[in-house]
Length: 436
Image 1 (cartoon, rainbow, N blue to C red):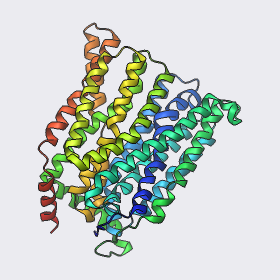
Image 2: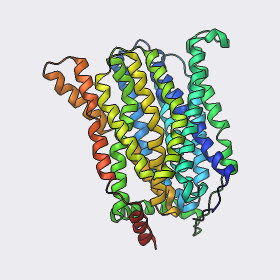
Image 3: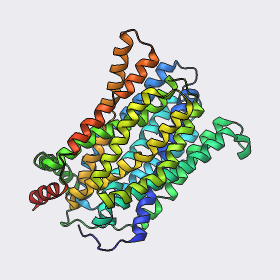
Image 4: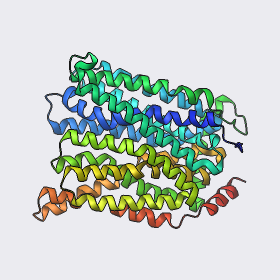
């Protein structure tokens, strides 16, 4: 794949704006309103345990579909130079399904689940091809910064729209809505419009390099499936890339566990829901400049060292969380997460982009995103198992929750140890020797 020596600023900004576009779904829908609205509106009158099970089913179904299909989709896209077309397809799916959530009537949890699953598939599937375009828009010496720009704009864009959506629900009459539920439904529509509008630049101004070997359309899918198996063999023998993927899977499991379990942990400590929404907004707006700052740090000291810094901060967070008592301490945790969350995600992506074969970016990023979707497996099991064990010893539920959250530290320690054995130059040499 050819890579320009000079940065095409318009292409870089256009690429990064897609993160601004789809992060509205991650904040307003996934992290914010959908879980609450699903339980209180679409599953109203239903036992809370059952509604939680339904929501878990929806998340699991979407995650499994995306995780299993990501490598195949990536291989197909590489085979036919169709990254942007696949990105457009999944973005449109996400936009349409998200917007349709605004039309779902109260109590119709089945339709809400179906639309949410397809919207999540659109969000996650599109990210496979969005990530795979990174090598084509960024020179090698700017990969950390360009990757960080995407995450930082994602935090800012997602946070801005989420803040407006929260304002709409808190003051529905100010916006002409009858009540908060109508405001929430309109919020789903605003996410779809936002996502569609800011997806246009990447479609218009980012050029996708053509495949080195043209293949007939009839053989693209078959070639893509064969390429998945070939990639499995490649990663098996490219020990350094395999080692990084294993390290990434462990520490990103810890990161995602903290993201997804923070609200549950806060509730178990007795904090109010508005406190948790405030903490989420704090993380979003702190994450905007800090993700970008991590890109500069990665350029100065190297992305691997910067990832180590982020892992160290997360290790401290997972240990200190056991001792918090007051609301302001929870806010401080949110600030610390904002410091490093975007940085560790951005630099992991840019580090990986530099060590994989550039002409197979979508295929390799398919595996990368698959690991991301299969993350949040070990962490919740650790938290639950440790919590149940501590509870069985006669300690309070609060103590069990506090000790359970500290168990996530094991993932950061293990991931950091494995990452210390990853050598960037050696990984590139292995990739080059296999593909040459």
